Amino acid sequence: FWLKRAKRLIATFPPGHLAADSSAKMAAALAAKKQEWTACLAKSGGFPGKCEKFEKELRGASKAAGVECCIDETIALMKCTQGGNRANGCASAFLAMRECNRAGGRQLVAEGAGYAPAPGKMGLFTAQGASLAQSAPPARSLEGMTEFGQEYAKSMGIAPGEVRF
Image (cartoon, rainbow, N blue to C red; front, top):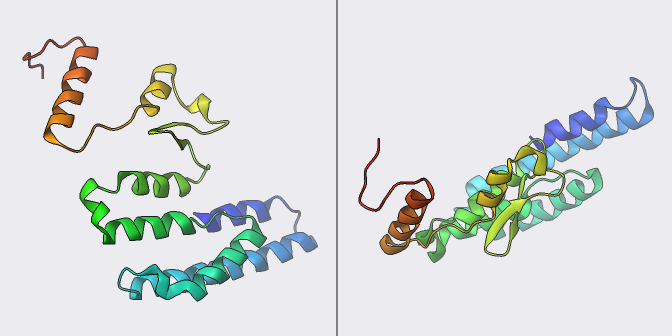
């Protein structure tokens, strides 16, 4: 996806333009750095610190190209899934990774305990959808999920104990 962003940037320059050639080289170098880092992560046994050299090189190339490579999100997700926090599902890490990898840029950003539409992305959401995005997920316990389910059913006009299919 990040390579697609770089290619879109290159496509804005006329053919033969010096900036297009330079951008193509930069995109190729960034792709190579990303591939090296990804290969290292695959062999790291879930410990991204083993790939610090490749990470630093990719960060530099990413910053120079102005392309988001989701480095922080990747590391946070790997640490979450390897640590004790994975019992909580790593939802925020997965969501951050998904939003970082969107071709059109992030649509949701963390805001307090919940999420809100990203700046300039409000048009993608209905008024009701935006309020849902700003809510926080229920506590990951039977009581928390039951309480959330009851409140949600009530908001849909379903009385407690009533079943609808």
